[in-house]
Length: 512
Image (cartoon, rainbow, N blue to C red; front, top):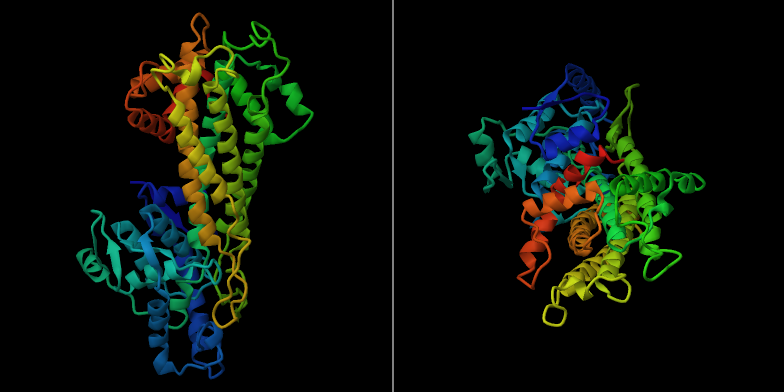
């Protein structure tokens, strides 16, 4: 099994995906263990002094003014975890919790948190055992970190609360730890606070959303090309020299992908035939501009993610010169903004894909295709309601594009008076990505049927390969009306699992 080694310098997006989705094992580097021990010595020395130090010998948040005596500090650390594990609602996905735990371990291993090496090792042990704490949908404001979600994870380290075992069954965490020979941790000064004061949940979801969107944007270039073919559009608007004079990198990449898919098509260039038209509609002609803007948005989000993956987010932090200083690095604004930005781009990509689908179904705008791509229009409804479903998904995408980061609700007796809502931005982006996949799948389903209905005209080899692979995968073609939901589900799986891209790239080579 693949192993990810966590050091002091952060981790990569591929590391996060390997642990969260691939079940990779986690090991601590010798450098990380040494850094953990060195930082712990600093915290222990401060704990022995009579002067109060935030997070070490004081309360937290609005209660930070109280100095805590040594005999109560272990209880203080346990209490912060127990009291902050206050999430509600359905449990979030296993991959999200694994990403959350792994990224918290990444920060702990930086040597800036003051957590003992044995606590970090126990965090790795839980990941390696496949023990996943139950984390709930609601509880994070995205400031002072993803407090409730991280607290539920820390609770499991203490042998409390509930967790899901590797078999998918939820049990008391104490039982799962005992079954895997893992000793619950006894938290000491600062450790409870360090385990729950980070942006790890929203960052993990950002990393996974970027991976999914990278696949979806390439898939959208494929479906846009198929729709252009089916509508007998022109590929002249995709010429590299046109995009070079407006040099957005995403736009150029998207246009290049569409050209690669359309290479050798016998359907393009017929826009001057029976019903001459000077230009294709915006949804066809401007596909690279819209998808390209989304790609450039992704590039910015990836830059933010990479910076966060190299960060140590905690409060207070242990600095190399031995100081332990309070800070505001836990504020989720940088991550929240790009999560919202990606949701906006996803909504627009879904919107333009739906417009192309609607054009394929409208006999007045499809340039010779049957109404709704029906076998016997009037007797058959064809894909009429498939477009309704797509429209409903797009409408939901637009609602999900409303930014969470524009909101803030003060908390902790006005001590935490401005919060990021980054966790909420991440949760709605996950739904947006899920729905966008369905939107792209419906466009593919409609465009594939429309291409096949263009009798006497030969599609591009890449288009033919995609359609053939879909038919082999159980995505049915044209014909009389039938129970449509299974077909759409098969198309969704075909896109979601990357099989559409795999079929096309066998002909085109890797798309950008």
